[in-house]
Length: 525
Image (cartoon, rainbow, N blue to C red; front, side, top):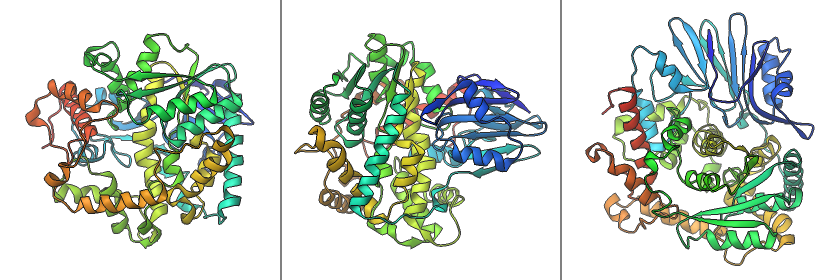
């Protein structure tokens, strides 16, 4: 058994390797302290208990006499991969390193279809056959064979019944305690906040003002006069925080495919399992290259407040469903970048069902578990690695265990339309700072319901008719960014997305074609 851990900043002692941090006692355990946290473990049950208690962004590998134990945090901030090559298991933090050791490289057809339809590969698959990933909130045991288990699964937890007012008071207290704990550990750091017009980043900015008011920069990015700009600027002004706008235009993205970073960036982020994002890339690179932020900057993002608040829930999810109905719901909502022929769709449905119980279950609990481990871990949270790629730390306070454990276990009625979360922010967090705006980007409950009806009706229309009503202009300049990518691509090999503004489809396809060329692998038809 071998380890190749070089992509991330690892610390090791006595056959234990750790990266990242755990929040404990109001401080971050890093380096030696994090090694000590995972020392002295002799059984799998002890390992699992340590993982359950670990509150942070981390990965850990323990090499024993005849086994390797490897785990990632609840949302897989620092991915790990493994493969069985020449009769031994090999673990790496770099999927490309494992491909170098493969004699024969082949795409996994099901994984490729998942990637094309969603932007990420699900379960423990990667784009290549015989290379696997450690799933979010899980650990693997590699010995004579590979075995894995989830140490975090919200389906096993009980819903905590509460009412709106008492539930909001508790959430407000939790938010204050959580942010205070994280920000106290960053007292000597410069803070950068990607500030949009929405609630989640405004929450981050408000809490930073309370507990770390000095050495802070808020920034907003996108095309000129985009809808996020005015509310973001106004929020920063009312909080007394420095704010800048980074305009996405042709000059900013000029020749980006050949810049000093990009060739390493897209492989670093994607790692043969996830789509690389470009929306934050240009903004952070701009801040770095223009020396607007110091080297000790820590980025604090509002990921993934909307999902944790319940934005993904629809009324029908409250019902108990069998795994076939649940998997169909998941596929309909999250695998729609391109149209797949029926057999490919059925193959993906089977893979989704592998992680769903045979018994009828509360659909919303199962779907939200899936969203955490798949879409958010591999797609949303994964995009935050743009910060680490460019040399900065980042933290995601809304993924603190205390907040997740509370928000994910309140009743459905308080989560749908983000009811409790938005009430808490408006009444307990934003009111004192005069941050409740008249014309919010975040739609009201009525508008959300109305929008769902519209989306359901539009889904019944043929693609050609539906696409006639779409606005192709992207607020983050993706229309022009992907146009540049397509210019260097054989367009005959590009599958037409279901909607012209599904720009992520062009990014996933560009990456697959580039990967096939770099690794000399035949594309799957």
